[in-house]
Image 1: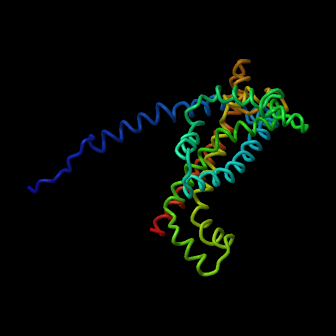
Image 2: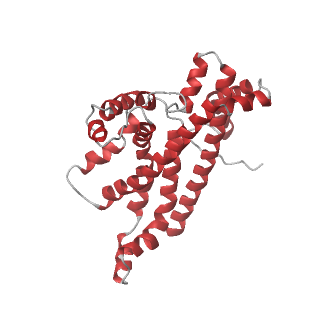
Length: 279
């Protein structure tokens, strides 16, 4: 009988590793999410619809998704600029700036919320000049956008930065030597390469902002119908022992999160295909 050759690996075989992977996935992800869906299934469709379309819930959706989208757009623009500066230029303190980009990843969100509230309050460093112009940042939807912009910036920078590093400057020089203007070089040469990564960063920033809680509760003021975000509304319902209502709203957010995850994976595949073709 012919002996089947086996490849030696540091890790155990496929069956064992797959089993542990599925067990871990079920315990950490699938079972908690399934419990949320099952809890909301105790409601009738009319009860579920009444809860998720309550005026207070709708106001929280508008603020959560609207502020998240606006913050992601701001991060898309300025995150690209930050990535461009870090890749294209060498200047004193560049490594420090590059490290500061990751600060929102390491900083506890509650600490970020307290710091932003202190800075953007009417007596803060940034809040006082804005108040003199008639603009109130803290305890308004603007404060929510500021907090979401803070926590979402690294996603755009870190997805665009590697693509810019791989982009050969000779391509830009060739475009310029052929008489192309800076704008033509940007939107004909640079933008097609960077766009998939930029959209991925935008989606990641938007998805992260949707579920943000800690940095917002301090700077928003948490006023129902005005500055109350959906995650806070869920926590409020839990504190009121309205578990069915909390899980109903959580299912809505869960559906949006799954949709965002699908978009992210699609965009990541597009980015990988672009790099493969370019390589």
